[in-house]
View: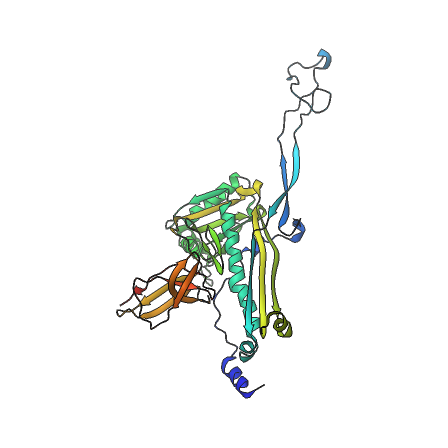
Length: 403
């Protein structure tokens, strides 16, 4: 290895990476074992559905031939068999319902050979693990929870007032009890804002105060009345999921979810294909004319809410809806009094993108002019975060004067 490469490794390969904070998968609790599913093709999965009628009155043969107890109601209607009394027929039906998987998402990530080498050989492995953790897992969670909420048997639009979070949960439990949904089958996905209000309710603070007396303080709430509670990032807990090229976001009219109470048996969470494949060296050079590595990431999945079990889902939705489509990347640009850019912020912070102004054409930006800190800009100009192929992945913003 050349000396300058050794020098670069010494300079850059510190084994301390600036990784973003990301929650692990929250919907793994809903995964269905393969033994409970049957695929009938590349895109379809079979789900068993059972339906039956109800009970009828049984008619005794107590007055056959005119000798018997005439106080007993005499048989009337259609009876099963030829006797003319006894059982009436009730039908039962078992059928297989086919559902089609909708989410087939993928990306190819090329990494130059020497970029990987000069960083100590860690770029490929780090990119693979981080892409799964920061891109694939959050999108799967966001789509899954949004789809479940859209198919809930009960949807309540509400602003959770102070000291009312516990009452909101109790309303969900009442709904489940009225519909005979087993408590031990339920799990709750809750936003951080809702969990804060839950911790601050009078009943909860009193209970926690009594519970931790003379012991180490532990205010984390992970279970309530036998139901596990999973706190979910607001970037994953929202109605109106919308897939973009280069990420995901929320459609106009969507809203944040306060909490989502789910009977696990009411949903079928399917991951047919989830893979990270790395092609390197001579294979990549021969196939793509590219001297380096390519990470191929693909995720083929969906979630289905069973028709007979929609009452096993209760969604508490924020009363405030989005007025426009919300891309996953939120862009902010700040300027000083001289109209110079002092700060450009994209959320999430790990998004690789460019910030530019230009002419918007559908979901793309034509003739983009890149922007950077220190540029003098027109305050009425419209800016976007874009990918390398000029696809818009952010909201439209104008510079925000500060100071």
